Length: 259
Image (cartoon, rainbow, N blue to C red; front, side, top):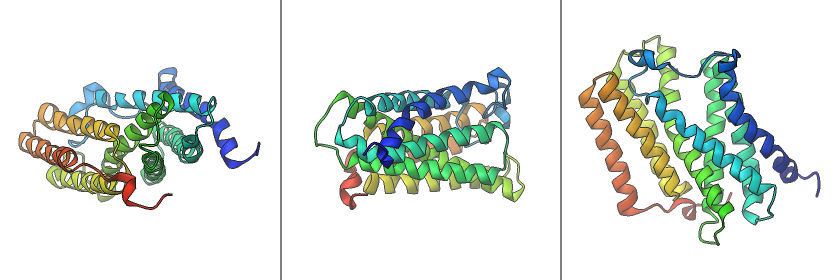
C-alpha cells in the first residue's frame, strides 16, 4: 500500500540520512555548541572517554546509513522491509540527540533519547542478523556495515552516557572516583556485548566498532590522563571480549525468536 508504515518510512530514510550528515556541521555555522571537548580540553575529559578522533566513526556510520537509504529507495529486497522502521527510529533519534547535545539540554532527557537510539540500533542489527546466510548483494553488505557499526558503537556510547549521567547526578567531577566510573563503564559495555553476541548479532562490523571504541578508551587513559594501570586493565578487558568472540563465535539472532 502506498501509505503503509513501511512506505512512509522508506520516504523518510533519505531526508534523515542527509540530516545526520548536516547536523554535526551546525556549530561551525554558529548554530549550537560543539559536541564533546576540544583537543585542548583533553585533561578535562572523563578518563573513560575516547579522544575526539575516535568519534570520527560516526562519519562511517552516517555514510553507510545513507547507502542503505539509497538502496531502500531503489530496491524491493525483503530485508529492507524488516529494517526500515527501526533504522528510521535510530536515525531520527540520532538527529534529536545531536541537536539536544548542541543545545546543552538536560542530561537526563538527552540520555533517554540515546537509550531509544541504542534500542533501535539493536533491533535493526538483530533483524538483519536473522537474514544472514540468505543471500548477498552490495545492498545487503552496506546494511550489514550500517547496522553492525551502529549497534557496536552504541554499546560503548550507552555505557559512557550512563556513567556520565551517574557522575553528574552524584555531583562528582570528571576526575573523581576514576576507578569506580571506569568499572561502571566496562560493566555496562561488557554486559551489552555478551548479550549482543548471544542474542543480537554475529556481524564483524559490530566487533570492529566495539574494538575501535575500546582502543579509544585505552588511548585516553594511557596518553591523555596517564592512568597506566587502568589502561592496561581496560586493554585486558577488551582482549578477553575479543578472544571470547573469535574463539567461541557469536550465535547472534539465531538464538532468539524473530522480531
